[in-house]
Length: 360
Length: 133
Picture 1: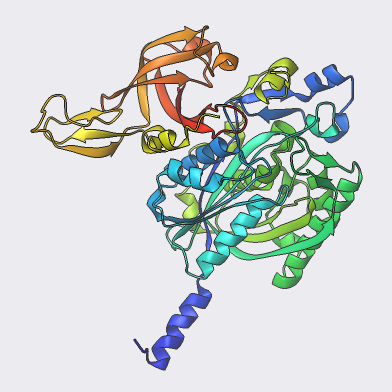
Picture 2: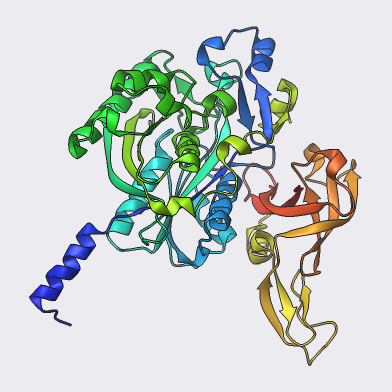
């Protein structure tokens, strides 16, 4: 059917102006915790420099897939999203339960979606979850989907007695992307990425635990986080003072605060989304759980900066504008409340739950 | 390696979503789904139905001597749960303080790993329940 030019331009204008955004989210943090002091006791090492007091541990019958389902289920329930509307599922993780066989299709079936959805598992160290968010955003802008689901989930692996073991944690966050004016709680105004070949952390095929380059990972982290944030500000014309909250990938409790300082963002704007000191580094879920915690308290009109980081290396940066809908659309339980439900385990139970006893 | 994937796949709706069925004639819900309604027999009209995700514990036990494949999970709690629509289901109880696991306790469905035949086979996922306040 041919449209008159005037009508066509009007419709085109509507499409161009239409913005996609977050219509709901859900977070899952496993119940078990191990104190960093317990890991210090076992290995007789001091990890106080990491500014992490405890980390969340997935139980032996949990993995990235089960946590992804739980996080998404919470989002569906809290924000009344019909799973039949989901047309895209992108799951970022570096601990997918299978090397070959998608997590995304298991999650789709477990949520009760239809079979009409785009799906793929993604991996880019700790930033695959935000990469999924970008893909869903783009698909929504292209009007190819109704609702997109992007999930960051990880049961982070770490070699016993490696520096990573003090922080590598488990958790998942699910974000639903749509464009219904009545549903959007945070409009995604802009996103961009900064990527380069910088191997600071990796895991080869069949290797059980990742390797890393110690202090060099810090160099890679700041290079990508800062450049992605600057690129975003350059492309949008915003400066650091325009943001009410900032969320950064959080491999430990110190790096996000230092990144904020470099960018000229006061630490008070970072603390709401800084969860690593309480739950550890949840890898692909890290930035997204921080963002969820900000959305728990954000008010209409506020602006949020979120920058993830994935080793290897790259950063995805986002500007989000909180809408009026957030007054009526909130998670039933804030992330900071959720983390209070916990059960401490010692190192022996930790290795049992995380399948680190290899003689079994 | 035993190839259990096809057998498991046929039960995904039941294990992932608690899909049972419901007789429109006698208004009773069944889980797992029945081939025919045991009350109405040929007069029954069964339709597929997702069961509620919450219920209460009817009875429970702590398993110290588990069947093959669950050795490393023991001891664990097993309970008969009555869902909100009256259907009953046998399930493991996880993520709950032992003193809160009791008859009448309110429980909610969670998605967990059920097992795997070995490190090469497919992972079986499904429902377990946890006590909620």
